[in-house]
Structure formats: C-alpha cells, structure tokens
Amino acid sequence: MTTPETVGSFTAVGYFFATQLNRVTGVPIGLVNNAWGGSTADAWIRREVYDADPELAGEREKWRALEENYSYEKLLQAWKEKVKQAKAAKKAPPRMPRNQMTGKHRPGNLYAGKLHPLIPYAIKGAIWYQGESNSTRAFQYRHVFSKMIAHWREEWGQGDFPFYWSQLADFRDEVAMPSDSAWAELREAQTMALSLPNTGQAVIHDIGEGRDIHPRDKENVARRLARLALANDYAIDIVSKSPSLESAAFKKNKAILTIRDIGSHLYSFDTKELIGFELAGKDQVWHKATGKIIGENSIHLESPQVAEPVAARYAWADNPVANVMNWEGLPLTSFRTASWPRSTEANESE
Image 1 (cartoon, rainbow, N blue to C red):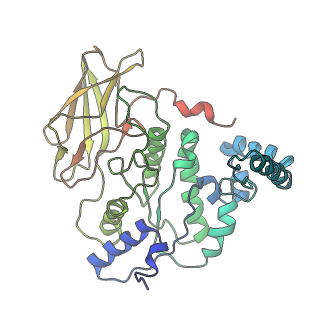
Image 2: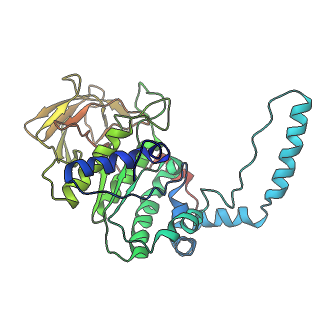
C-alpha cells in the first residue's frame, strides 16, 4: 500500500500514472517498479534471442570481442594503483570502474536479473521510460525497441498486452540553427514502434529540462501515459494521442502537411507564430520555415531560403523549440519526411 513513507523510493512516473487511473476509475492499481536507470534496451532482451537476431549480429560481435579478453580484476588493480597515486599527489581519486560484464548495457543482463523472475505474474500492461542510453545507436533502436516489445509479449504469453512509453524529453542546450540530432532520431525510432499493435506514445519534448536528463516534471509525463490507458483499456472518452504527421505534399514553394489526431483543434502555444518547422530542397540543407494552420488539420510551410522544398521536419533537435499542440495540450510529434541518411547510422555495428 502506498504511504508517504514508502512512495519516495518508488518511480514517480509510475506513482502518478497509477494515481490518475485510480482517480478516474475508482479501481485500485498495483504496479511493479522494475526500472534500472541508464540501461539500454538491449539489456532487457533474453541473450539467446538477441544473439539469434541477424540485425543485431554486429553489436553482439562487439560484445564478444570485449568478453574475450575482459578482466575486471585487472581493471580494479589498475584503479587501486591510480587511487594511491592520486592520494600521494593530493588529487581527487578516479572513480571505481564498472564491471561491464555485469552491467546495465550488456545484452541480456537485465532480462536475466530483473525481468525473467517476474514473468510468471499476470500483468495488465507495461509503461516504459528509456532511450537515452541508446541514442548514439538511434537508427538501430527502431529494430531493438520493437524487438524488445514483441519479445516480452512472447515471453509472457498473454498476447499483445498494452505497452505504452514516454518519448525522450528535451535535453541539452537549445540550438539556433538547424542541425543533426541523435535524440530526434531516437524519438523517430520510438514513433515507428507505434506500428506494433496495442501500443501508445506520450510525447514529452516540451516538459524536459536542458540541464537535467531526469526532468522533475514527472506528473505531466504520467498524465499523458494515463490518457493512453484510460482511452484504450478503460473505454474512457478522452483525447489520448498527440497529433502527428499523416502526409506531406510539396507544391512549388510550399510544403502542405496533413496532421492526424488533432483533438479539438490544433493550437500554437504562447505565440501565433508556428515555431519548430524546417524545410530543405534537393541540396538537403535545412532552413527554418514559417507556417500557418489552415482549416482543421493542415499546416502550410514556406521558407525564403528554399525555393522548391522537397522535405520538411519538425522539432528536430535534442532540445527542440517548438510550439504546436492540440487544444488538450498534447504536443505535435516530431517528424521528418525525408529518408536521407541518419547521422547515427555511422555508429551502428556492422
């Protein structure tokens, strides 16, 4: 039972998620907190399943090469020597090295230690808040994340139970000019997982903190996750999805975007000016764009630097400055229309 004495060590998102469901439904909600901060999605997949996936062979070979000559004892001995040297020189000692063989990034580790023991329990569904540690391999995450969800469902044997996640929040410095973004690519990979049945995504790129990878506003994160569960699993008539791109057309100097899941209507927060859109021509160089909401679900974009646009994108940054949402306060999902090479593709193991 939740009490002031016990809730402080529990997941804040999980607590507020359950509280919201309970307030609306009147049904007691039980949760299991099985989180591990800073983990990769790879660590939550059974190692045998991971090893058998040809798309993950390169990453697995990287770990095999590390395992072959890895000695944590040698690392500890070297660290102890450096600590002695630091003390002698009256300097701050180095941090104790982590054992990568038992750590939260190695494929299969957290599945074996934290997930597998829970699988006999019946569950209603899962909520997920992760992705930061996979951001350097964001392109591969589109496969790893979907693989993990399908794998969990197979392991539990309860069919396609609900699986809802928080997209990455905004983080790091805001940038003035268009640029590549690993975090935006990770958000793109998360959005692609919506192709799996019975899934949902809480878009939160408007409530993070540039200086803190763990934003303090957990309540609004939880409320957006709760909207998904209330609408999909408890048949509550509530707007639950963030608006997202349905289609894009390019005519002369304009991009015409069609937006789905607009709720009551689209809205630009704080200013009438639409902020966060960019256009590119055939040269693949991105420029800021101005836009207008036309009718119920269309946005028209232009940029004086792009005479003939062929691609558009929105909220494409680690910490995007963007202001389009529906009237219910759910932000427009970041997107890009171009299939040009992703900046993180070069980081994938081959």
